[in-house]
Length: 426
Image (cartoon, rainbow, N blue to C red):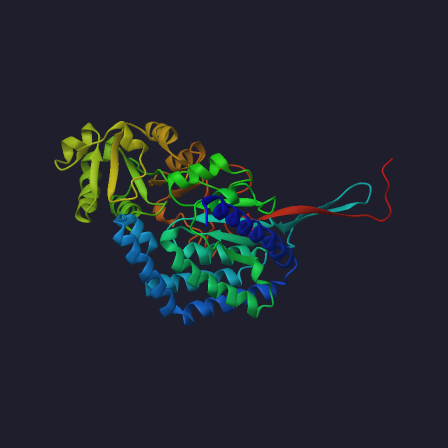
């Protein structure tokens, strides 16, 4: 087959996927809460029942990735274990039991002329999810879309192809059990990058929103090329600020967890800011804990003087999402300097303050414009599951429609229902 023929065939396949997704969206939009709950409960059971098949598929993906010399952070995102499958099952089960958002009355009021107006939640329609190495996105995104009444088109990366297919099959089992069409959830059957291009064009108007889950290159491409709305964050340049009032034990434990629990996730801390007043008491214990876990320190002049093993931080370090066991550390003269640094370098994803001074916390919360702000808690809580959403389809850092973890409510829009008794407008 020639390149031109292959391209034509892929375009036709993607067009059919878009057409079918619209069919699925219409069915899901009117599906009962019990149907959607049944679909997800059954899917969770299928994931558990087919655990060995899923792990075998993942082992195949892992072997291919390792042969390519893929980074440790990437492999960590790709790998499935029994514990991670348990987490996927818990997420799908939790989403199944969430209140159904569709049809919920957000607000209602009466006008002087007797009209009764209701603002009601409705599905967005068809959601395209483009992701790279995280096979759990298949289950999280699929379950969230089904629960919120949206059809979903999933395009996973080539590295997670077999894992994603195994998980998608379980979701399809759930749809079948609930009497819902298979078109509600479709996994793009091609790893050709041209399939992404077709989705970004909107599949002839059949995709209503795109959600990219992946690295900077993928997200930048989506934001540059998409002809439909996008829920996205470009980077997770996450900061932890240790205030002059910080409790030492909290500062050590929170910073260590924020950086080292999982270094490859978007909520992992990349920069640590420490107030000058606690350099003598807090800096060394925090850094020693990080170094003991294998973290490389890149610091400013004050940090370099206190920590012999630290490397000098460059301008680039304040702008880098490492996704690895590396952290940039800076000593600041004040809370104002910390806020200014965060505003200059942050990607507006997640920031944390460790402090006992309530006024400092309120100032931090009020003056920093990131999607998620935490006080005395690890930045690794920047996750839809930890917010009680069951899972997330992504973390949105934009300011239109959705921001922060995107769960079932964020995957809805609304319409107005206006009830009258014969009114006409004069």
